[in-house]
Length: 441
Image (tube, rainbow, N blue to C red):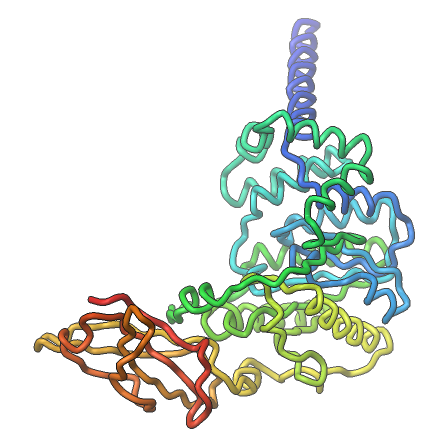
């Protein structure tokens, strides 16, 4: 009996030692995301957060706490880790509640929140070392690993995301020992392109995304029935229970995306509609800013510096709109008139074309078919114009603007240049940005 107890004790001691080593490695030997570290440290050092804005980079880049504080009268803070899923939001919010008791917890989602059950392992790499509870770390690890089977990879984060250079390790240690000074040095390196405050990372430099818009969003219908996964629903209900257990009120908002996402990606609107039904059935207040009308939120497509994030001007406009709805919610006011009723009404409100493309098919008779299409609102009638573009920038028109998508040509007709298609709204002015081309065949 004594021998058995001794063996059990030795095994327990051995396992405890292994865990201690893993805990140490995952805390001190993992690459440190400076913004995540600064956000968590700032959050933990405060006790005055009244309006917690929880989510991924769509919160970090798009919800300005200063504006929400000013407009609502509630002290706001962005509780964010990039690519955060509902699974990660649970331990992150539990960490928030250790030092703060917000009156309202706003969980921000987007369509991409619902298209997978897997937590990005890089999100786990950023969040797990910053969780103060070993039990939360274990639960987070088991939950995320169960979805993709990456138990070892997610347990040994330092093995996958260890420091590659001594400079990285040195900066991480300096960030821990003197966070404000080290982070200020990092901000200086951004040269004003980004500014951090209360979890909000304001991006000030506009990028050129015209090529990505032109080449990435070629619509492909899948016929798939996009519904929120049962696992995601389970995590959202667990999140609701966590919020309520801590005396906070949960509000869920879906933040908007580029209009082109809604038009080109067949999952975007169905996922949001499925989520809306789930939140209604679960008694969770939900406001979908993708469907916001112009009087609440103007289209902000021109303020995106990449395919998913806006510059600070767009964030400020969006933040004011979110604050307006939160104020109305707190006052018990009905804001349904500020949002389009459904996806059909939203799509009908889009009176422009976002992008155009075409494909070349062999007719089998020695001729080729040029077949154009575009992403546009449901009430928009497009016209297409085909040209042959030469190296010197001049163009030979193959056909003027027409509602017909199709143009048949011979191979000789499109030799010596690049075929390009332009698009415009019926009888509207030509937008020089609405074009697409395929190199000479």
